[in-house]
Length: 307
Image (tube, rainbow, N blue to C red; front, side, top):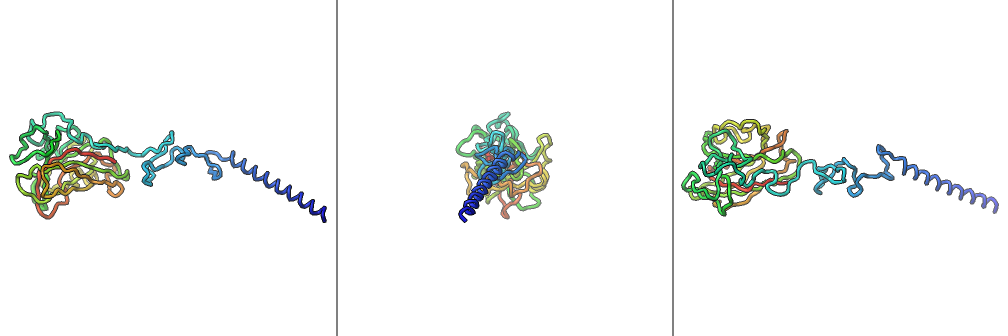
């Protein structure tokens, strides 16, 4: 019996030793048998160990949980779209200081003197450009915004539900962006200053400033002059498929000529953008007016669009 026990014990040791050898061989095989095209869960070697990703993989560029970037060849997560976090951001010449002429040479209709800014239509009632030395705003009761801020824009914001209202006080302007903004490219913030330059003229009910994103090829002509305060609608001015309503700002009846800073948050995942994205920001009266009539002449300055 003792001899049999010793034999069994020896066989058991041999089996254990063989099993360990087998496991070692399997381990070695797995170490060296995983090609770049295989998935080897035991020893997957990643290009970028810190990110735990490979070059070319989708990644989260800003920590918000969305895979909005791509890992580059130096293991950086680069956004798939431009990120501009300092003003004026995507807006060009947001403070209107870059000009091609004298804002006081003409009383009004001269917004196109500001580089990268345009009127919304070919002629007629357009947005205006002023500066700190302007003394003639076109109407005796108008006052300049305070504090002074160099060159700034001004225009009427008229809100009315009258379908027969004419286009006399329908004005607007739009800015050519530094780059196109597309659907599902994150959240943007648009900020600007406004002031009521007509506070001494007559009282007014609240009005709304409308802000729109527009795709418009820079080589294309501007739309024809509107025939009414809402004809065509702001959404149809450049074509409904080329326009997206970004938001509106309510200007209350108590607003004075002191600059007020406001902002609009633009979530590109919840809005329907033009197929080509937007390359302009349009500022005018809102196409969703209050029931009660209102009209103010507002100054505008310091536009900024960042993400």
